[in-house]
Length: 320
Image 1 (cartoon, helix red, strand yellow):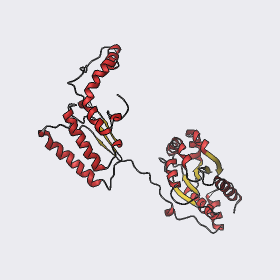
Image 2: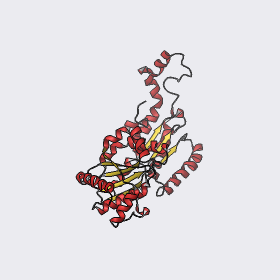
Image 3: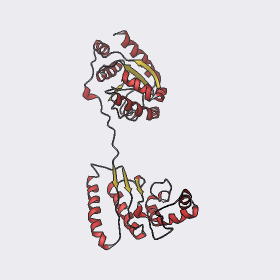
């Protein structure tokens, strides 16, 4: 076994053993042009031959980062995980570095030590765009060449594993439904058209719930037509059907009012033109004026608050 491979296995192995399963990040940097997939698999096999339970997390995508490594580290009995990233382009490296930097704090939840294997271009992108990430790196190693690792693996009687054995860590998509401009009204003459459209939507969502589950629902404006209490009774009834059909929890339903959700028959008139900053301040900021504007949303707040809770009466819990 070559000196560079012996040194790498000895130093990295000592740190892995001392970590005792604690969240520890080790960075191994390979020369550009190395076959990182083969190199990663040989690292896994050699550490396995050294008596470690090594888990191969596969190759990281440019748009993935530590959150997926943490997920992979928790799946299965192992005391070491290995993941690689090869810089296919400058853009891919930069994208990867920014995601790694943004997600760096999840590294504290690793279930075991992790070796991140990168080429020099990726290391350079990390140092440039993810300087804070390096505060989480316990040690940076020079990775042996693929040829040296293959020779060492062969000498130990182990070979690079089947590429198909490496688990694919798929990031679960966030699925959301976006609806807008329902303009619901209680009039019997409107019920037929509304029921045909919305009844078909509910039926489709119920049918596809098992294969295409939803995580979030957004309804962005004009739920009602004139901001009236009677209209919101229809709105809330439909939203309850929607939640029941999709299985989405109420706290994952977000609504915002549109111009048709304003009851223009109450409160102060909305002016078309404001002549000056002081007029705008008086109109929107003055407490008395704001109270009058808020009256236009009383029907919205009372009805949507009954569904979403008083803390989200306007739909988002972000204030007026």
